[in-house]
Image (cartoon, rainbow, N blue to C red; front, top):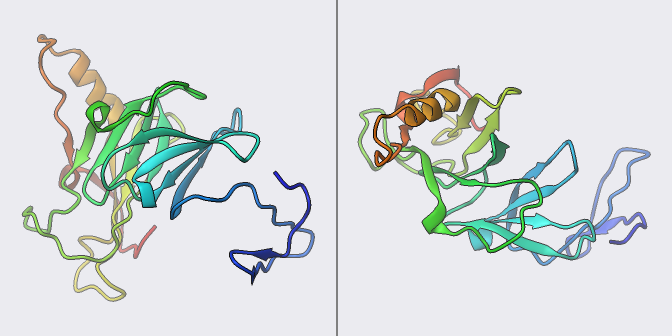
Length: 206
C-alpha cells in the first residue's frame, strides 16, 4: 500500500477532500466494488464486488484480494452477526457461517442459506415488482438481534411508499424457533420481506 497522500484518483479524476484529510489508494483491480464492512475489533475489511457477484476480504497489505462468498446477483448489502456473513441480491438476503479471518475455499451458492426472500414482491404480494433501486442495504442492531433491510423507492417521486421503507426482522427469534424444532430434518424456512416490521417509511434509498 502506498503511504503517500495522493490528489488524483480514478483515471486522473481529482479527489476533493476537506483540509487535513488525505486520500490513499488501498487497492485496485476490483470490478464494481460496492458495500463495505470494516470490523471494529480487528479492522478486517470485507467488500461486495458487484461485478463478480461475490464478497472478498482485503488483506492488510492492500494487494491481496481473498474470495469469501459468492452467489448470483450479490450487489451491495453486507453485514456480520452471530457467526454469519450476510449479503444481499435484489431479491434475497443470504448468509454463510463465517468467522473473522476465515481461511479456506470460497463459500459458494450451495452453502448459502436464504434468510429473507420476496424483495421483488409488489404491494399485492405478487412477483414482478417494478424496477427502481436494486441494492438492499443491511444493518444489524448492537445486539445482533434485529436485521434492518432497506429496499429503496421506485423513482424520485412514487405514488405510494410501499417500496420506500426499512423493515426489520428478529433473526434471533427465527434461529431460536428453528433450533427448538422437534425434527432435525426440518429445513429453516426463509422470512418473507413483506412480513417484516416496518421500522421507517417514506425513505428514498437508505
